[in-house]
Length: 459
Image (cartoon, rainbow, N blue to C red; front, side, top):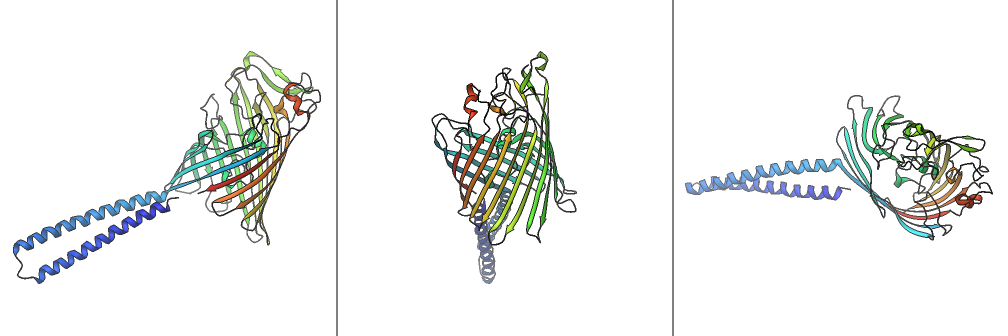
């Protein structure tokens, strides 16, 4: 942070003030000396008067410098520098190469690896009614901009604010929760799939009263490009993302209930004539009309989340957190992820999805934390596992359902440093036994469990 800088500046200012005081005392003694010496020469008095005038000018210069130092210190107080680094070692269940959401895919022949998962640096500058934020991520993959936004608060009822720039979508709980505070290393699979970028370019209006009967409520409503924050707008549509959150503390009962509901309502523009939409007779139907090129298709998510915090006597705080999301996801044949393709060769797949996650976090004293997680994600609720891989069904590996059990332990060394050991146990549904090609390996459970050992330092 900036405490050491401010200390140096304050110390410099203090020295200048001491110098100013010494000069004034010297001037006073000098005048007394002059007055007591009645026989001093006129020339000597004039010279001393000249020196005294010079000393007065020096005092005025010190006054101006003191004001400048104060102004600089006031600016430093408005600037906050923070960040963290997450270094980790991971071991995969197999060395055959596999896809994973635990920090990225394992390449063929890779069984274990070292990673800088996140290296964040953030600057926040706040004035009375506005905040500017600049946030980057530095890893072995390069430098990526995360947040660059301006928030302006209105000074009248002190309930509304406007945010514009690159920032997080106001959807759900996990997306908005700070990465350095997460008990589990990563998000659940559903949010890694439908909102992998977490951020977008847009503007958002927030209602969050500081006091009154609605002070427990926060409402966010924003318009975004719908492409993520690393890609420029590529169609004529804007996506709406809205959220209503509440926080209800029950102090006498020593527990708190938080939660919210979210909506993502947007559109994507197809760059292809090939649209896989309805699932009929256990297979994807395809529409290949030329009019599909440039046509808009709905992207809609509905979400709900709930968090309960309770102080367990003699043990520590416990938290039970649940989150659910469902909707319509435009994507490609190879992936169920957020669609932003610009290639005409990528057919557009419209999938109905459902995903949910439950976390239990138990603090044990002030140093230790137990983490348990279960999450499920079905990227295509219309596809039965026995139909995936069947001849002519048009289903792909992106339609396979997953369940993940996570178990972890977090140790807090001090207020800056913590260590995490976490194990992801991933299970995929087993597809049709007649599956061939890339789907053949999914007739049984893929060996894609991952052990993560992580250290994190934040400042």
